[in-house]
Length: 230
Image 1 (cartoon, rainbow, N blue to C red):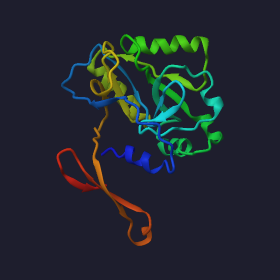
Image 2 (image 1 turned 45 degrees about the horizontal axis):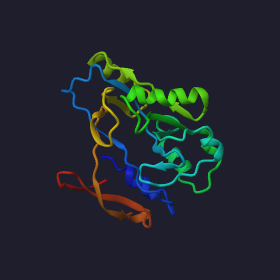
Image 3 (image 1 turned 90 degrees about the vertical axis):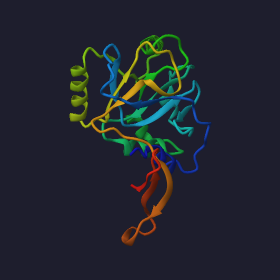
Image 4 (image 1 turned 90 degrees about the horizontal axis):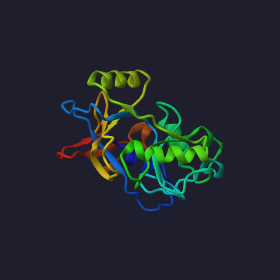
């Protein structure tokens, strides 16, 4: 069950909000769907970042505060991607980006781009716009996530296994012909060994015993109305 959005709200105390950006979101992959001809890439387990041409903003609308050198040579147009260090390191990334005053650890964070919003063409053409920009304005921080053509279902499964074996989160498949859109898309799908889902957090429950005074569990409700604890 996906609770990362809630965790991000909890780890940004006294944050400045800029308004929630209008982004594209992933749906779950269905094995019955033929995605040959689409493109695939690794799904990084970091924190989503949206550069609006002036500021770096989280998916939830929190204004992030990287050091000035970090955004040097960033474009004056929007780019969308993942703030990331390495696989399985989400807690480290969150502890870095949540600080109101940035520290030297931002140096290990890269900005891995999977979308260039509001540009013409399919995803490959949109990413090419950023690639051309970076040729003239190099950045050690911005990385464009490789998009690999899907030639067969076996190739997709092999790539997924490769990522999982490296302790990765999963992969994303996208229809390369789809124009830029926002919202949850049928043309952008997450592929995992075990699919996750989203829930509404109804209550944060306190810990018991030696955990008194700490967060103990989350009381949640899924899309079907089922209430449970995490």
